Length: 201
Length: 185
Image (cartoon, rainbow over all chains, first blue to last red; front, side, top):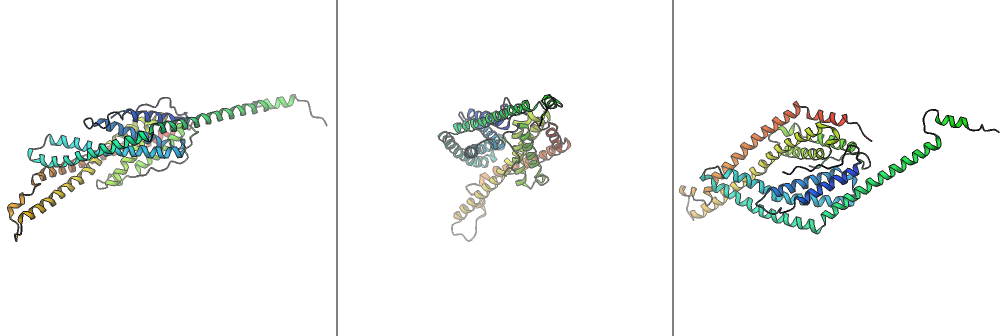
């Protein structure tokens, strides 16, 4: 199984929305990297890796949900879940067939026909699962899933930029207030007041 | 199993402050199914516990670095737990399907034997082994027995892992790691 790639540039202080943009960006890249030759039933690890990548992407979409516009986030999450289900429809018979093959290699001859009867069913399911997966991959392409994921990342990025700009603006305004009324250090404002001409009637 | 909603998340506040709430909620969810999931007969609860462990693992994958080295250890321990429950789940999915196929083949054989009997008053004993699926039972029965034994063995391994969670105080140590890193906002 492919190890999750580290999401670079995150630290505890990273604003949640910026972390969301980075995490979804990395996990979406991982998903599409693992989509190559996924329909090849001779190499079942490809489906497994892509399935794990969809789970990881789904996880970050759920973890960081408050950072994305709900009307864009909801349909993307739904499509990622659909893709994960389609990968599961292929993966489940893959795993079961693998286990059965291991068993068939060591049992007595008399047990072979029963195992083969079960394996035949699993192979039919694997084939059907592959068709389901092919349709889901096509749907992801026509539905521009990659582009919509990029749009989500951009929205979270914008939200983080705006929040930081606002925070900078607030800090500047606060500095301005301090300059007007003193630094706030004990005695600072008092001295200025003391230097002023006494108000006379 | 639907994930419990995490309250108080804010996109403008630091990652660590939000991650703490999410990790704590997902950790609590893992424990929600104990002790029921420890009973080998409680298949659904164990399945839900696996999903809860998966959610905890994935949140730790992106946020463990906020809470020091123990959070990453907890991630590894959670993965171990998720893996073993996942293998138990595979047996739970497969075993009833093998039984169903056996039952289906037996019914088909009964039907075929009945047809061979024609209009006889009773069945010839020799027809017992003449069903078209007669050679398939042994393999399927062997598979069913193997799955049952493997499930029992994996469940024991799960119980051992879970008791290690208790001995090693995984929950308390992870919660300490969450608390030890104070709010950064």
